[in-house]
Length: 333
Image 1 (cartoon, rainbow, N blue to C red):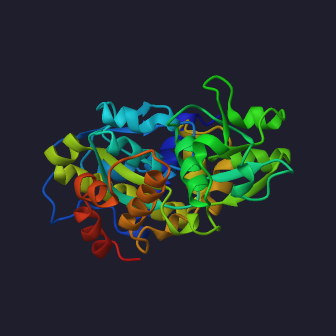
Image 2: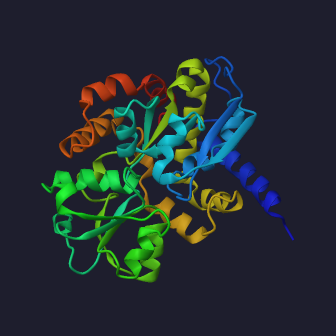
Image 3: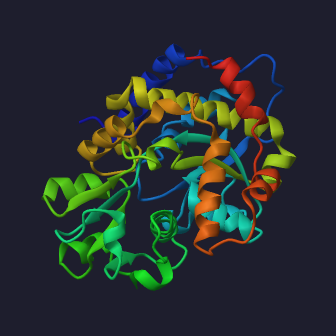
């Protein structure tokens, strides 16, 4: 019987070969060796951040020998990065901006993909505006779903603090509260939307993969602890290169990527992983402008009264696109 470690090895070797098709996985001659060979990435229950889960072999090619996945809470992943427990990771745009406004040492490096969140509602809800007076469940104040939904509600003219009855439950998932009819709506991230469809519960109000304006902006962006980015600029660029190549693999080799995620223990559901990889637009990182995303969500959060900083300040103090711009030229599709 083939063991999980054996399957993982074979999958890694297979992806390493596939990586040659999206830019040969050789150390880039123009770059010096990384200043550090250790890198810590986040591991969350969600599966939309697939590129960093399958980037391990590509990170090794870039010179990293000690690659660690740190278990974190996806809803508050920015806290682990701000506290220096994680060096670099994909994370949701809106809560990242909220943390940056509060002074967290976070630097946004790139946009990676759009379209991972979906708003589910009961039969009385047909639009975001219908959330007025309704009960909406989120994990907690400042969690990723709470921040995204606040911005979405503000965008359509609602007062998120007054017009929505928030239910905060750190112990029971909003998805389960919704399935039991105890809340009217919730914002789901993979694999939750895939599970909801499989169980035929509720209906989708907003699908950020296809519905404007949400489909026009990155959902997940690559962010790093500011000290790591400043101290190790070459390592940061090399890590970014590996994750962007892994993002391309999510498009070109979704079946292999899904299997590797299962074999690596990042998810237990091969079918949900494959659905996510086929549904989430991973192929837009070259085309979309990540600065537009920061500006858009900064405006929404400022309108909702959640941040005080202007978009210009957030962009000037909390982003660094230099490596991304270089890699766009290097890794032409």
